[in-house]
Length: 593
Image 1 (cartoon, helix red, strand yellow):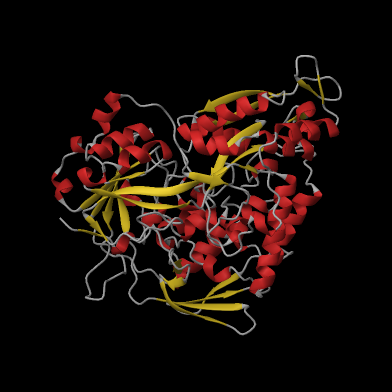
Image 2 (cartoon, one colour):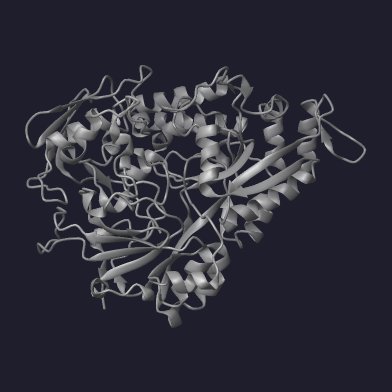
């Protein structure tokens, strides 16, 4: 289960994290029934997450699970059923005729979780001192860089409740982007100004997971109450949260939320079936079992809609070097950077078998980086290139590109090198591990030898985003209605441009990194789409980005899994969204018993 906020959209967080294999002993150790305190008698929601949070510093987070969808709010929010932008911390806004000035008026009487007033100063601090601060490596910058100049907005305080954003040029997604969470100036300003021994802001080490929960100041519906490493994260209703219902009763209604850290989906299923959890994600291998138990187990399965995330295999296209050493073996780099090689791999992967076996029929072939629910989604019926399973065509593409086969049907390049590479994913994720095993078999049929290796999450992400020492990988990203939320994936300088990653602030430099023409063109089109206000033209621009992506295959998309959750019948107000899940409207949900 996830509680996404606009922050989740802007950040483009990793889709799913599963780390290790649990045993029956883990079930006993982690079962919420063993966590009995007097506080546990209050109305609460108990669910599970698959790994520990990595940080409590929202600006520095790139991972999921994270606490921020529950603990922070922005100026606006989005109804994840209708897609409509709605007021949140700001009660209203005004947009100038030239679309260059946005003036937000905050709600009266807003407070932080420690009771301190939340004012325009906090908004200005959040943007100018944190998100737009070049000394702080946060992906939020990518969502606010405007036009070819990549300038950031100017943010000014007009009075205690009013803030003005001045844009260098019109920027269509701007209003939606202001759902980015607001942070407390009184708690964080000193750490932004203070420097450590290396001259970096001490903010970079502020609010780690070892910070006492009472020191984490928030403005969302819940505050952090307790964190027990590898066991649980506990949230308590924020008494200063602004929302009230039509009768004037404070929201959210649920007093307490417990995230059990179980690190294995099988364990989560066992805990849900034994009533230890109130909700569980319904993965393909669990659907048939849970469906027949709905009435007996007093729960309901919600969803059965295409998910909004992506799952893909991709190659390291970075041609650069660090300290004179190539990031990728030059022989393999030539393979990976040959478009026919990537197209051959796409044709060699049997996605329908993947759907039938791994997804138990609960998925659809995926061909686009844009979620199917988005108005900008381009279907295969609209001239989007697709790669049906065709091993013979794959072989033809490889031969056309100069590859050849030896008498043992092994694939060799033009110089006679055997085509062999490593494929990575995160260990414990059963779906991805099954996908990797099938890809290994599928590519063997066209003569490629794949060494498939699942890694522990921290080791895996360090390779992808820091050392850049990897060859091929299976991963996923979250999705949303606005494609520009993925600007940091598609901009060649973006923080999640993972197939040809630029070093991030504080990382070792790379010599000789190259950006392909098609790669640069997608980045330019994303900028162009933000400058266009004619919806038909916006669709045309994003359609072209999808065509270029599918032609050049920086990501080879696999299967779109159906999004489903099983939830106890004692929860009222569930309005399931494939984008936000079952509890995206957590403030409205009640416990009926």
